[in-house]
Amino acid sequence: MVLFTIDDVKEFDILDMQDSLRELKIDHSYDNKIGGIPPDWGHKELNKYLEQEIVRDCFDTLKALNRLPDDVPWIQEELKRENTV
Image (tube, rainbow, N blue to C red; front, side, top):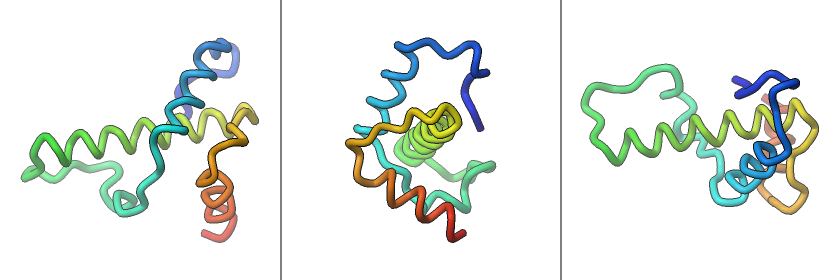
């Protein structure tokens, strides 16, 4: 999911999303949980799930804008993974 329409994105939004990708990494163990929250999850699991939604949204938005940061090693791995899945 992309967070903004292209016209709505401001430079500070881009910088903020890039910072988020420097702090967080996509965790593929949550791939099968996206779209549904198990009823027995506590705060820790829910927070991790929401963090994963945010990092995925930032990644997708920056990718659409061609503004993924170059200094985040896991991004290249993720782009390669997307091309093989």
